[in-house]
Structure formats: structure tokens, C-alpha cells
Amino acid sequence: MHAIQAIRHAGWQCSGSGSYFDRDESITRTIDVTAYKVARNSEVGAGEVAFEYHLFVEVKKAERPWVVFRQREDPKKIGDAWDNPYFTHNECTSLGNLTPILRQHSIRARLGWIGYGVHEAFKPPHDAGRWYSAAVTSCKAAYDYVRHDSFKYLKQSGHGMTFLAITHPVVIVDGPLISAELIGDGKPSLEEVSFAPFAFGFSTARYEAATYRVDLVTKDSIAAYLNILQERIDAIFIALYDAKRLAK
Image (cartoon, rainbow, N blue to C red):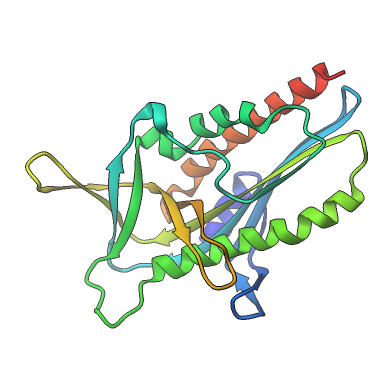
């Protein structure tokens, strides 16, 4: 409930649950939270421009810390771009022109590191880790949304309309989040963090191998996280608007 309230308070359209088709099991499953934000201008250039940003969120309660193993990145090589499912129609600018915006307005760029694993502290060896299953669920939901809704939208969109929709898998943890990094002497450096970015890869018999950009966010940091995403949304929409306005 707290996650839904925080997302709605930030101005997002938010549902307490969503559904997606799990291709592995051939059944419809639920995801904890779906949310989206729309930026639109119906009178620009030769038509309309619209941009949607969709979140697919799993929420997990953690009484014990989740420890994120992280590694530093070269700021010039941060690859935050088009890893997550998206769809576009009647492009007014190359998606490559938007890549620097995606990279600039990301927690990955702000932190300067990327997570490569999560350990749930003091978890009994026989218990399955909840991080991995939550991340897979959010990725599958994002995949399913683009797979189905892109076709429905293309049937309805007008010739003069420019449209871009980006999806973003997110896991919210209601509990402490710690990052761990090996420093020069081989000892781990531990730090409590508000969020952690991941290049999350998975594949199954029905899902081709792919790497998704998944963010792990603490419950108390949802507002700060959404502020970063809002900067991304605003910057991308401005770029689309300007390109559409100047298009001939």
C-alpha cells in the first residue's frame, strides 16, 4: 500500500496489481504494481507527439538486509540505454539521439556503479532467493506489455502521430539495502544505499537470452527515485517535441 501511495503522490497513474502472460507456464500471472506516466502534445509540427513511461514493480518485505554486490564503471562507458522493451511509431528522431538522455538521467550514472548480484543476509540455505524471482517477474511483465500493447496501439494510432513507450522493471524492497564492494586490500566496503541498478540477464525455454535494466529501490526512497525518472521523462519528451516541431 505504501508503494502505491508514494507512486500516485508523484503523479503517476498506478494500479495495485497487474497481469501478464507467462510464456513459460502458459498461464496469466499477476504483478504487484503497474504504473505509467504520459507526456503529450496534440498540436506540434504536422501532428501529435506522445511519450509513455511504464513501470512494472514487484514489492518484497525483508526483515534482514539485502546485500548488493557492486562494481565501478567508467562514466564514459555507462551503457544505460535501450535494454528494456519499448515500442515506437513514426519516429521523428533517431533513438540514438535519445540515448545520452537515458544515460544521464539514471541512478546508474548518478551512483557510478552497477550491481551484479544480491545476497539476502542470513537466509537459510534451503530458502529460494526472492530477489531473482521478483526481477524475473517484472521483466516478464514488461516483455508481455510491449508484445501485446504495441500491436493494439499501432492499429489505433494516426499517421501524423509520433509515439514512444518505454518499460522499466523495478523491485521495491521494504527493508535495509546494503552495497558491498571489494576495495584495494581485498576487504569489502559496506554502505547502506537507497537504490541499486542492475544489468539483469535471464533466459528460459520460452524467453530468449536478454539483459534488462532492473532497478532495486528501498520503500523509503521511492519518491527520490521517481524524481530521477521524472527528469528522464521531461528530457526525453522535450527532445521528441523539438524534433517533431522541426520535422518537415
